[in-house]
Amino acid sequence: MIKIAEVLPATPTPLWRMVKQAGVNYVVAPMGIAHGSERPWDYLPLLRMKRAFEDHGFKVAVIESRPPLERAKRGLPGRDEEIDAVCTLIENMGKLGIPVWCYEWMSTFNWMRTSTAQLGRGGALVTAYDHSMLQDAPLTEAGVVTEEQLWESLDYFLKRVIPVAEKAGVKLAMHPDDPPLSPIRGVGRIMRSVENFQRLLDMAPSPVNGIALCQGNFTLMTDDLPSVIRHFGRQGKIFFAHFRDVRGTPEKFEETFHDEGKTDMLACMQAYKDVGFEGVLRPDHVPTMEGDSNDNPAYSSIGRLFAIGYIKGLREAVYGKHPED
Image (tube, rainbow, N blue to C red):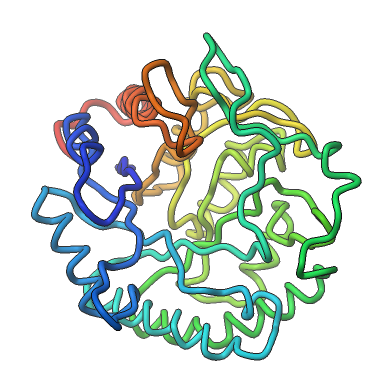
């Protein structure tokens, strides 16, 4: 049965208690709690993080933060040291029994929005993207970064990291580009289509090379997201899912509540069941609702509770009622 998780900070906050009260038992975690000269991907920081969650009744299912990777992505001098840090993280995850690492290959900037306070349903604040607003934007400090450059650097990275991940028993889940457009301000983006994700899988055949299926991005790549879930799920390549929704096109979209976007979310849940996916999903981006702060756009606490309840209802409709994950 598919498992519901939430992304939480590494040290306890009221959100830990709220999520636990909502019946969530799995965590998508950052890297470890480092002291002094320790690095967050070292063994002891990861152990401290894992034990803190376990002491509060959570199981760490995914790590979704990364050592610095910009030099690796752009193929610059110093990339081998960055990749060494990733290998250390993966080795330590294997020792601690943390099964999935979610990463991405977005150079220069991560997820991009042109608004983080657009009015949504009932005055909720949502994030939005309008590519026309960036047509005349200057290049970033990185200058032009080509797609060919990114494919070459990704191939180099995977050749180094996959053997380490295979030995450690840790799965590598690639997150899509957000938004799935290329280029943006001169920076190419390669993880932006169903075909390119298949290319990723084919370029490095391995049981540990797979996908973080972020529905908010994939639904902008296809008119039939359930079929895409089945396509990758039948290959056994979905390692992790972000269960969220949007309205619009890659060039102009806004994020939505889980019950009002463009995607048939019930059909998606059914597709996960049909392909036998038993990993974790998390709600990911949510609107900021009345009474909550928009200091961290898309990660409203109240919005998460709405999302968790909606997903639990969908899961029960598809899988039947289960008292525990």
